[in-house]
Image (cartoon, rainbow, N blue to C red; front, top):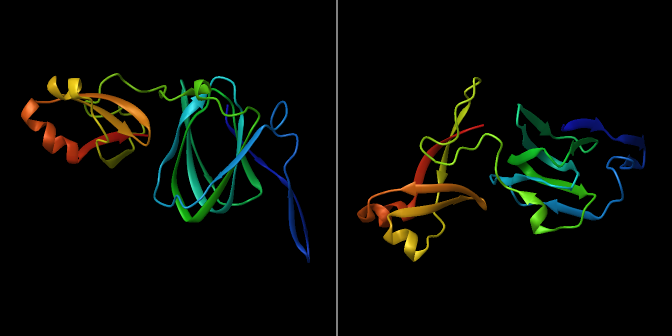
Length: 190
């Protein structure tokens, strides 16, 4: 389960030294950072093997973490706070603010087959989006249809993709395909 830890920080007149050690199992194999993402949504996946540790070095970011039975929300805005994500933690990074710089450290090298993009709560059809939770927080999301395949277009269906995450198929009348190509609105429960 995802958990927040406070990194050891040593402060003196020369500045702050924050220590990142003994956080993830195994050795550190991949380090990357996300920047210039204010207003964007990132993530939208979990892993088969990779553990990750996330630190917001500058600005702030909100991270939604979902398991089959639970959803948690974390806001990182301090460089000595580290969110540890286990492989089963589906995560979504959003609400990047104040020129956020988010550092991610992993104990696995990048491998496309390690990523699982499906949410635990995702249904196979769009309809009104993901099912409402008891807390019922809805966010209106403007989404562009980024592509279609000729066979799909002829069948009157469009493949819907948001930030690289395939959400499903949307059935429509063939005559509606051109207007749907411009934009679609749907409700997303998070």
